[in-house]
Image (cartoon, rainbow, N blue to C red):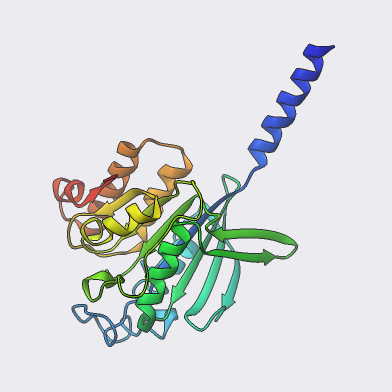
Amino acid sequence: MRLIFLLFFIVIYFCVKSDSKRYIHVFVALCDNKYQGIVPVPEKIGNGQNPDANLYWGAGYGVKNFFHRKSDNWKLIKVIKNPSNEILERVIFKSTQTNTYLLADAYDGAMMRKTIIDFLSAASGNFTVNVTVDSLKLSFGANAQLLAFVGHNGLMDFNLDTVFIPKPNDIIKREVIILACYSKSYFSRYIKQCNAYPLIWTTGLMAAEAYTLKWIIDGWLNKENVSQIKERAAQAYHTYQKCGIKAARYLFTSGF
């Protein structure tokens, strides 16, 4: 009888575990010629107040467009316009292969500081975003297992020391992706303060487009190891940028 009860609870445990949701939250700083210290891009894709055509959102390799139009393993399930003063659009995707939900926020390009603060706040367990899709309640930010920042490296233009110092709110070590130029150099001490783990970040200049993010997430969903995920990032970048696989492998790194 005791063995039967034990087997029953084991079955229940694995049923619940297999049904458990995973969450990914992507913080996108819209490309902005006017408000960011970038090499100017064409005006249409460099308007940080127009997400529809923005380089990092609605353009061909922008996060929204790439996951919606060019990724057959993600389904767009909700679009929210202007969920806050800083965020111009929010999209929610559902994986077609796992019980994983991805929320991406398009931050006004003039709000780079706020974008980074929200990202670091989530990484340290201090910023939560709750949304409802139909009757389904979902929770991102600090409740996401994987967090990503995509866009220009705003820390090249300013530091946060006088306005924000991240402090862990719990003991959870969240994984983060930072697709921005020289992100390891500039974000390192902040990520340490968050008690987060840098799954993928960069050692040089890069185009922070969504194909790299997509390939990294695919590896993460498949529960690949860090080396495999890092190789995915390099292969994605080389595939689309034609930069040479050796250079691409040097660009991406993991851990401290």
